[in-house]
Image (cartoon, rainbow, N blue to C red; front, side, top):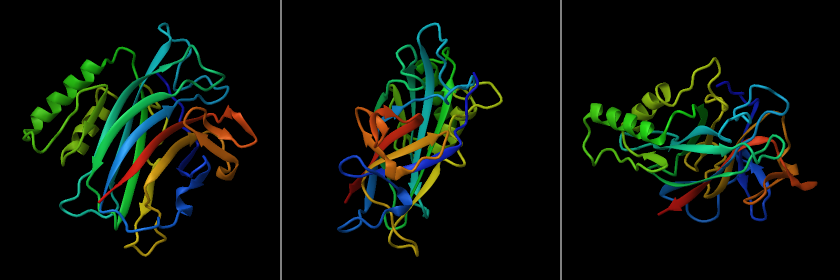
Length: 266
């Protein structure tokens, strides 16, 4: 299955009322900086590149759906020996028969990731999106993950896997397990296997301890892969309508958009 790599990538913060701001324009949130963070995946808004044949989601699917996999990683900006990444893989289906234009119905994710991250240094956020063959089932993904973990010979205290429609890994071996899954069962065949460029869909939220303007703050964020540049000041986000143009609130922007929340923990 071929996919289309987006040409523009944005990490935006959703303000009260639905306005969106570039993450680099955020300042330090009022109050004390949180000691720890948690991350919740909320929903994913799938879309196809307008007018192109090599779309991530295929309307010609005989069963009316296409399968995808999304990986979100959140880690410390500056790492110490005791810092861990929080990473999750979500395997999901896109309903392609009831799409409007190049946009499809949102996919609910609802996955909570505990992240052991020092808030003073900030966060690294990266999301990868791949398409997966319809013949790849959730049972196959879980079975493969179990084999990888058993080969690592780690105790239950060191690795935690929630075998549901969302697979969450929180451990020092999470990166190795996820990389093995990505290179194996989750990676589709084809010259271009990603709809998000993993090198360009990586963002940094700095904390107050660095010599940079701090932007790490709790709230709702959008990670978007777009096929044309857009001015964020002209957009607004609604959890029912998606990312829309301010002048036409009923017209959803054609983009693959991940909504997630950073939760401050003390």
